[in-house]
Amino acid sequence: MLPRIVTFMVVVVLAGCGGGSRPAEPGTSRSAAASDPRTVEIKLTDAGCDPATIKLGAGRTTFRITNAGTGRVTEAEVLSGARVLGEKENLVAGLSGSFTLDLQPGQYTLSCPGGTSAATGVVTVGGNAVASSSDPLLEGAVSGYQRYVTTQATELVKRVKPFVAAVEAGDVEKAKAQFAAARVPYETIEPVAESFGTLDPDIDARVNDVEKGKPWTGFHRIEQALWERNTTAGMGPIADKLLADVQTLETKARTLTYKPDELANGANGLLDEVASSKISGEEDRYSHTDLSDFEANISGAQTTFGLLAPALRAKDAALANDLDARFGAVHKELATLEQGDAYPSYDTVGDAERKRLAALVAGLAKPLARISDALGG
Image (cartoon, rainbow, N blue to C red):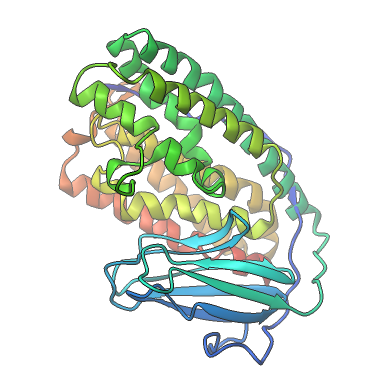
C-alpha cells in the first residue's frame, strides 16, 4: 500500500503579463502557410520537422503539430536558447495538438527529436517588439506561478535529502517508503525542469529514454535497484547526483520569468503526459507508485489553472466553469482508488479503471488547451 501524498501547495496572489496579438508576416517560408495567418502548421515526418525553417512576424502564434505517419518522431518544441517555451509530446501517427506563444523578434530553435535530417530547425521572428498587455489579473498569475515554482523546488530538495540519505545508508525499506513522496514536488513543476536542457532527463529519465552509451541517472535508476534488485548497492554516486541536480533545479528556477502562455502550455503538458503515456504504468514501472505521480501532475496543472482562472473568467466564464468541473471529476475518480489514506500499487488497477481515468484526464486536457486562445482573444 502506497501512502497517499498530498501535494505541497502554496496559496498565492494572482497576476501576469499578457501578450499582444499581431498576425504573421505574409512572406513566410514555404512552410508557414496556414488557414489562419497566426497559425503555423508543422508536420512530424521521419525526417523531423516539416517545415524546419519558418519566418514569422512578432506576436501571438499558434503552432499546430500533426504526426503525418511517422513512428520516429512524436514531439515538437520551440526553444529560446536551451529553454523550452512550448511543446507538444506523445503525438503518434494521426494525432495532432497545438500550443500558442507570444513571440518577440529574434531567432528560436524548432526541435523534432528523432528526425533523420530535420530534427532541428529555426523559427525567425521579425518585425517590431510587441508590447505586453497590462492586465493585472495575468500579471498576478505570472508572479504567483513564480512563487509556486520556487516553493515546490525548495520542497523537492527538502524531500530528496532524506531519500538520498536512506539510499546511502543502505536502508532499502526506508528508501522505498520515501520514494513516492520525494518525487511529488518534481511532478507538479516538471515542465519547468524540462526547460533546462538535460536537467529533466538527468533527474527523471526512464531506461528507454536514455541514448545508447549515455549514463542512466536519477529517480528511476534508483527505483530499479530498490524494487527489482532489492538493494542500494552502487547507488551512492547516483543518489549524490540526484541531490545535486535537484539543487541545481532549485537555483535555476529562482531566475525564471514566465508569460501566461507558458503557464497554460505547461499545465496542458502535464495532463497530456498522464493521459497518453503515464497511464500505461511506464513511469514508475518498478515501484508501481504511479497514482502518486498522477495526483501530483494533476495538482500542478490545477494550481496553474487556478492562477489563470480570474483572468479566464473575465473572458470566458463558461470555459473556466467547465475546467473546474472536470478537475473535480478527475479528483473524484482518483479518490475512488484510495484505500484509507493510501493509494494501492498501480499494478492492481485494472484496464477498465485505467481507461476511465485516461478518458477523464484527456477530456480535461482538451479544454485546458484552449486557455491561451481564450486569454489572448
